[in-house]
Amino acid sequence: MTASNTAPDNGASGNDVTTASSVPTKAGGRGYSPEQRAGALIEALPYIKRFRGSVVVVKFGGNAMVNEDLSRTFAEDIVMLRSVGMKPVVVHGGGPQIGELLARLGKQSEFRDGLRVTDAETLDVARMVLVGKVGRDIIGEINVHGAYAVGMSGEDGGLIRAEITQPELGFVGEIVDVNPGIIERLLAEDLIPVVSSIGSDQKGQALNINADTVAGALGGALAAEKVIYLTDVPGLLADIDDPASVVIRTTIDELERAMADGTISGGMVPKVRSCIDAVQAGAASAHLLDGRVPHVLLLELFTDAGIGTMITAKPAQPATSATPTTSTASTAPNDHRQTGTSQ
Ligand code: ADP
Ligand code: MG
Image 1 (cartoon, protein in one colour):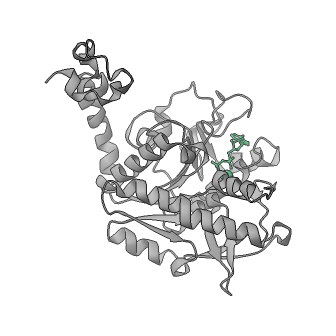
Image 2: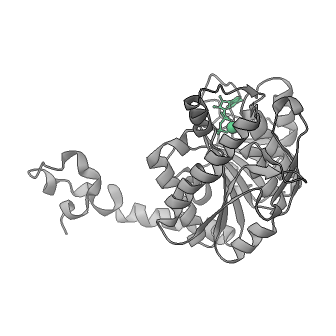
Image 3: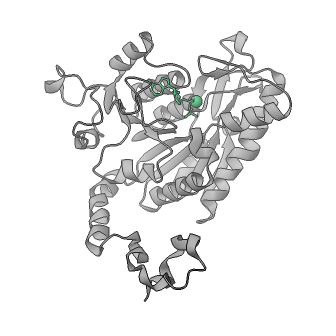
């Protein structure tokens, strides 16, 4: 019953036997009182009840994906969602990993409007890295907890039909059709689909697709409760140079304006575009979250604290539409959550 039996996080002082028994605050709940621990669980209860049975599409990307600790906590979160009766679907990118292998092969990466220019060789590399490496790593992390995750490319089961619309980008596909049957069957079996962002055209030609776009299209096709993007910024920023300028809540109209005036650029363009597509197609809300925060998914889904940016088709309360909703992080966060199921 002493702290030393239950303090694995004290590894840095592993040889320091003289202090091992004098750190009771580290025992069990990592320094939290029994009341605080019980309080956190009770706080989660209404969210667990509300989200039971609902589909949540999560786009995993950014720095979180190349950090071992964050990959592990991400997998824990996904397994937690499944364990409380939700139906998580993971979509992943792999920009850094594709870029790294291309660099090793002596090839330069080139982007236009956040999309990778993809010649035949780059397509092969992207497909190998996404389907054969990044997807496998995520599945491995999840399946440490049980035989849950099943990997697939968007080519599998006709999931993502795409075509080239911007030939100057090479083998980059725009989604023309999503056939989510294969995903629905896996979800019905309580499995966790892990989808790599490759699609194919009618002739079977594989095409590289931005992973955000895939997540948005799947979120819409599955009428997801939420489509959640984990990225490497705290959310959508009103001023890209000010990390504190997080937009808590916004709508399609406001985002269209921000894209037109250049507030949104680079990789945020396809991300925001796919958020718009998802909520227009029937997802209840889309969220941009900071994937660098451990367990950010649990914080978003199961706590009262609003976190990141929430996007809905329309403002939550028409009565308040005269006031700006692109307020900064200092305003009441609870509003962020309570409106999550509005149209
Ligand atoms: P991911 O791997 O998550 O897809 P991206 O690099 O493609 O990451 O997209 C996120 C990036 O978008 C941010 O790191 C940031 O540099 C850029 N960005 C552009 N405009 C904005 C904005 N208004 N708010 C936040 N990030 C922005
Ligand atoms: Mg991106």
